[in-house]
Length: 74
Image 1 (tube, helix red, strand yellow):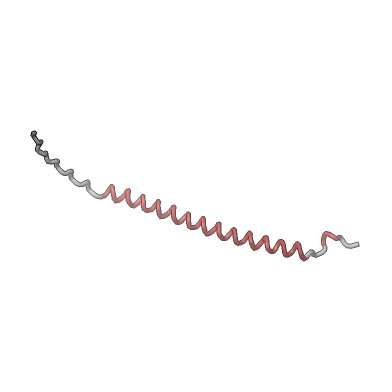
Image 2 (image 1 turned 180 degrees about the vertical axis):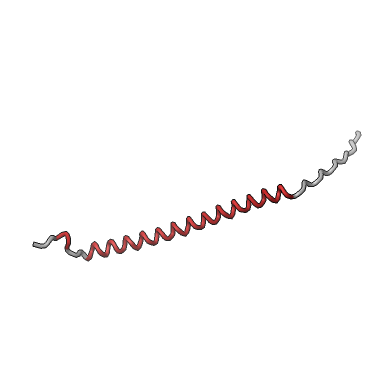
């Protein structure tokens, strides 16, 4: 006697195929978003490191002297 659980089921096959398609689309969107976030974080880190090195290597500008203002008398 044949096992009924091993018989092909077209409804289950279509349902699993659709579920696999949805899962693949979700996985690809998640992968793309994670790559975008990684690139954004890398760019931000490189910019901050570059800015820090530039700030260390550039000389400090001399301070401007304040000029005194004359007081008004009534």
